[in-house]
Length: 514
Image 1 (cartoon, rainbow, N blue to C red):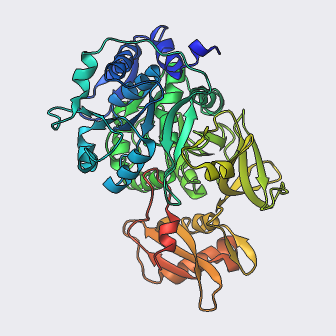
Image 2: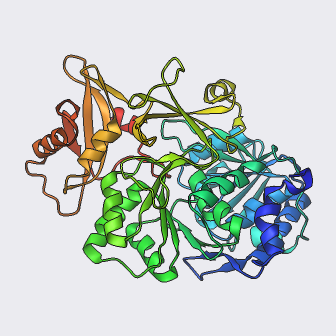
Image 3: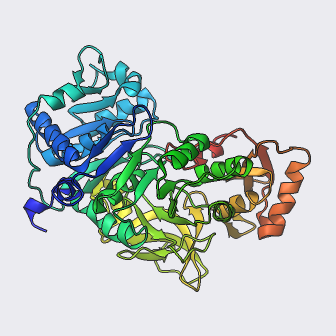
């Protein structure tokens, strides 16, 4: 690929607009007036976005923060920024003002694009951020000092995609913070096509006739691939939903807009299974369902298949690798495992000394692939720790079975040593959710009276489940399922579990619960 062809916006937007998909719907909104945009219209609008940024003084490699709901303005802003050589920084839409303050100072964005409903989250910061010069407001009657996004686009002449190098930084994501402080992760232009050529083409097997709906939002690496990279790689259509993905809202979209590909996370799949068992399954032409963010409990996958007749392809990805690199595949699904390496990626399991472990032993997962990030922003030591030559450390503990499939054991910091034996919190959680009363579970370590670490479980119950005698019943259930020493010594029933916006359980918060 030459420098002039390397701009990812040229490949994902202009190639479709100039080809057979030009008049085809690229994005349609599931809520509101149901706005839609074709690939040809998207090419024009992203060109105007590039022209607008140049007109307002943003230069090559400047950053623009995107605090945008999943609406048509998101692909316009994201791909338009890439065309201008400006680096979009995708912001989680569910953070507190104090966290936005840290991130906006950290990334030094000179401009911000913000959806009207999200304005109150950053309004207190405007005027206090030393690098922020322009705020583009998506919506009518923007606050004083902001620029009308739609009007500014309309007033700008379209500009062509800037020539860039394939290894030039294209966009930033911030890690989800499942273990604490978010980190700015820098990704290059070539990484987007790399994920499309591997997972998108060879596992998901995306087709031009597909309509994709991702409950995971675009600011999440998983959602960005689902909603933009993969469908746009083949000229397919994406359904965008700006609201909160509840079982009711997602099932309504599946029935009403009839996507063929659905991308969810384990927490949502579990809640949807419980809802569908009570209310029935709608008529929807799903042919492919995928999951990531956390390992999918086997019971949830089996229930989903019974209801829909479609498997969930459980996979593993990371912000650092941009999308899924380890996955089950169509026709080759084994629930309770994360599958095998996605074509184009290589995997290793290593011990604490960095030596490869044998089948049946637990080790940290390392991955090699072309979608690896360029590094963390302003975190040199952490970059060296994570990105080691061609290999990227994931922080996930896995066991490789003799058949080559990988079984998730937990995060490196979450593993428990009980009676001298390593115990996977995820294994205990998976056993708990097979009990008919349990909807979700999370397990962490807690010291007993002798100072020895034992499993402690937090469970969310299904609607109508009785708590009478439940604690002892769950302990016996886990003993019977996975072993007598692995059962949780303490079990607490809670209304919900602390999670990141991407659906990952924040076990560090449960450990801090006392």
